[in-house]
Every structure is written in structure tokens, then in C-alpha cells.
Length: 448
Image 1 (cartoon, helix red, strand yellow):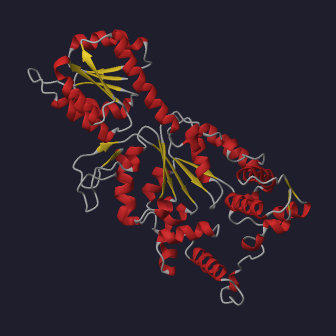
Image 2: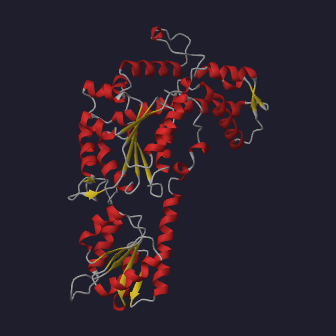
Image 3: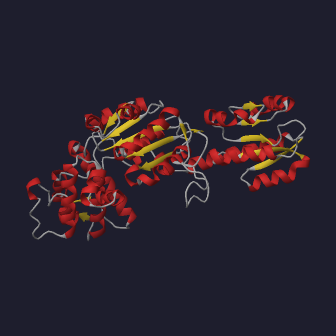
């Protein structure tokens, strides 16, 4: 916990009392260093005095620093430390977001109870946030026993405990987001939030506001201050998915934040320090993009301290059936169906399928099969590979659309554009005359 009080006698008393009950205790005599200490120390609770200037007892200083704490570290509970005459101000502080207040002179039992409740509440909030990424990898997806995935696992076990930036590469649907979650779970930041940003769905106009935040009045719809994703991830992990989609002119702004470890909210006038562990993911060849001048070389090396590549499912055939069985069990329970196995022909079809959409496509296929199945055994007809393997798009089929459905034509056009522009979503969207978020939703729809 962190104590901020200008009275040396009070600090001395608390220095003796609190370490008996709290693992780490820091004491400040002035709030001048409060923001920097919060960023580096990351306490579970702050005990904040309401007056610091000699002969001034208005309590306004305490309210000011309470506002600063709630603005920059909104999840950290603040307990106000106040004289009896300032109880009304402390009540006002609770209206502004303080957890509780303690009146001086205090009773040790009451002080410890309030601080303990605040600390437990904070830990509970942190543990309940983003529950999905705290689940063990085995509960979501198998590592497999092939040499490629065993190599990935060994790398994760080495990299996760560090704060090194990680770049995860691989095709769509290989589980890059799950791998990022596993790295966070095994890190020293696992008790803090993991904030995920899908950069493929963030428009250029909202890029700075979403990542760096904005202050009230910064633009027409800015009714209140908004903490960006960097601030929300403070003390934890920031996961930037599809980082290859950031336009060149915005890459410089991201690089500046990563270098300075501080963000400037849109419309703001001061830098806000941030402490994050960065994990990025992409299905693009960033090194090739650097050579083509579409991705900054300095940003590439900044995000690529360690690189982990997830191989596609077609290179891990030994994992297809175990994953299919896991998904079968999951969706049989979800949809209350008594489906418990695959027919021999269904098993053969799954092993022969190319799975261009990787694990995401496999999961989607099993879900559909469970829904349409009539018995306890899934057949090759239930799997309905019409959208995955029965129709495999070939380069010379571009002009042959006779007898195809509208969805098949659309999928074909998108796949051709993706090949033509080497996966650059901005260029693909422009060529198809659609927005990037629309393109992104269609990529998911067709497991591209």
C-alpha cells in the first residue's frame, strides 16, 4: 500500500504498524511525486491525507489529488485520511470516488479493517476482469505433441516471466490471441489487466483516442475524460492484434509512446506515464513490409524483441482430431446434444481437409455439425465442408462464377485481393471499395 501524509509522526507510526499486515508499504511526505510513484509501485490501496500546506485546512488538496488518482489510476481504491473537522469533505471525497475515509486520531483496528477491505476489493476486481485470459491454455486449446508446438511452448516458458515485448506471427485462426493470453497468465503481471485491441477494427480517426485516451471537450462527442487502452493496461499487458494494419502515419505516434512510456491524451496538455508489457500479433510479413516501406523499421524492432511463430493447422495434423474432440464435447454441452463421436468417414474428411482458416475454422465447422446432427455420431455430411474444402479457390478461377452463390463470389473476390496485396488490409479494403471494419468482419465470416 501507499501512504501520502506530510506529518512525520504519523508516517513513523504507520511505518511500524502497516508492514505487519501489508507485504509492501511505501510512504510519501508530499503528493508531488504521487503520480510517478503510482506508475512504478502500483499499490493495491492508497491512504491519502487531505491537507498538505501548512496552516491551510480546506481539504481541497486532498480532493484534487483524489481526482488525479481516479483519472489516471481509476481502479486503485483511495482511502482518505482526515481530521474530525473535515468529515464533510471526506464524505464529498467518497462521492467523487474514494473508497472510504479514516478520521484522525485513528483506531488501529478500524484503520486496518478499512485498508484491508479496500485491498481485498481491488484484488477481487483485478481477478474478475478478463477472466477468459486467466484460464490455463489446456482449458482452451491444446499445445499438441509435435516438434513445432513443443518449440513454441518452450519459448513461451522462457519469455513469459520477462517484460520483453513479444511479436506473435501466424495465419488467421492459429490462436495468436490465446497464445498472448497464456504469456500474460505466466507473467509477473497476471494479477493486473490484459487489455486487447483489435487494430483491424479501429478506424484511423479514432486511433489516438482509443489508444491514448482523450480529455473532456477534445472533440464534439467527448463528454467526459476517457482513459485509452494504454492507461487501462497500466501495470498489466497490452495486446495489439493485427498490428500490421496500422497506417504508416500513425505508426510514428505509436512508436513515440513506446519509447517514452507515456501517453498524451487527445486534447490533453500533459504526459501520463504508463507501465505496460506489450504483445503484438500479425498475419503479415512485417520484415517484408519494412523492405517495401509500408512498416517503420524502428517500430518493427521495438515490437519484435522476441518473436514467436504459430504454425498453421495443416502443419500440425496430429492435433486435428484431439482439437475436434475437444470442440465436440464443448458444443454438445452448449447445445444440449447427445453427440459423442465421429464416423470413420468424418474422421478421414477432417484429416484430408486443408483448414485454411486453421483452428478457428475447425471450431466453427464442429459447432455447425453439432447443431445439424441427428444422432450420436457426427458424419461427413454433418461436417458440411462446402465452405471450407469442397470449394477451394484457384487463381485461374477468377472469371468463372457461373452457378456460384453470392457469398462464394464475395469470398473469391476477397481471397484474390488478399493475395494481390499480400494481406495489406488497407489496400484490400480500398480495392474492394469497402471500409476496413467491414472487410475485417468478412474475413472472419469466410475464415480467411
